[in-house]
Length: 355
Image (cartoon, rainbow, N blue to C red; front, top):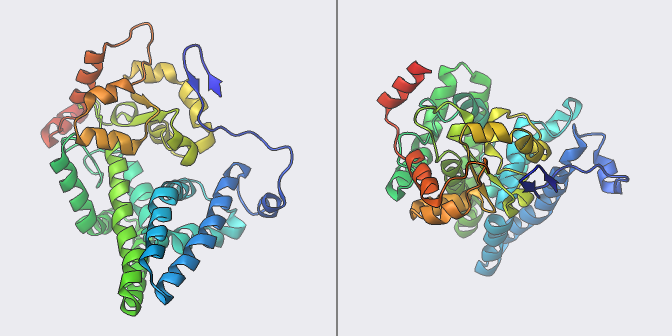
């Protein structure tokens, strides 16, 4: 646990080991950072679990096995896998000498979670971070009312049905041809493999390929919606005002401190184990910028509460960053509601012009 004068953080930080296990010692010479050994452990576990179960489903399909497969996939491992993919997209797991092994996570493991190889990298690294949820961001939340079920339905539908076309067009326009090419190859490879194997066993193909594809994209967009739900219309390009942070959540322990989304956008290369300390070191900046920080909940919970307009509940988890000038509950609710309203293109252009 780390703390300052008024706030304690129990999210994971790095503690050097006095002695490594034989397995860790085997992989340490190959990876860039010993702090990322949890990704090695998770990758090995996923390789041992999902390919054998998928093969079982294609050889002798059973809805009991299929149910177990989807439960493990969605309820237990999807979050950790996505955030492992996220972190290793920003910071390569394996050293340059062994860089081919970096393909294991997106190409070998990713398809079992509905992650088409290279698409996540192209969308998140090459598009989302440079555009920072502004108008040119294909996953920008600004043009939607962020506490609207209909708004989220439109947001997800646009991403699911035409998101790939928009991404290819974006990458082409930005002259990021190698990334665009990898995205197209990865997407087509996934679709071809899924279609071919579905002709062998349609039920297994549905469980192994198509349901995970839909569910993972739904949950990723719900997460991004929550991460960028509370946008200050006067400063939409300010990472402290267009993103949120969730601290002291079980989610952070399970998913590598993903709750620290503001800090991640401020410096995307910061290691996940440094997020809690960075937050406490810069808490005065968070308070000055009126950043939205929640405690004990995660992005999925934030998304769910917004869909049902449960601002009273959200306010219960709001973190007072300036204890000398605390907000009342009504003031917190008013702030949250003001930050979720739709931001028009005209308003966005005016604010950027004034910046």
